[in-house]
Length: 170
Image (tube, rainbow, N blue to C red; front, side, top):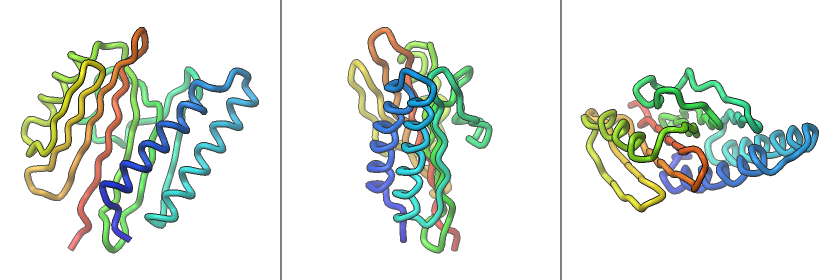
């Protein structure tokens, strides 16, 4: 089954909502761990239903997710990984990943960094409000696409959500 942009969007929204439960809603260690496990399993099952394979990792309050598998040119310097969802390639999709990171840097600095990082990619969408920025771009060779959403809450960290997908081989 082909992993469409709309499917990624639904999964990302689900992930962000569930991560809010796992990352910020729980107050004691047991409740926090249960919330994190439930969020991971629900998201994994949703991905398995649409793509066949998945891997989901969330960071509990104050924790971090390993982002070393993320292409280095997409890793914002000093950002802390908060979530990672991976979908393995199949016959019709090249697979993809969704990462969520946080940084103390202001939104304009993060925006400028990603504009430079994506400068050789073909920009398909760019939109901005006072609280958020969205870039969608395709690689020069056309074999990959990336969506970068940067958001800032009042008195909170700047959050970067990246969806990176590859075209099926062949």
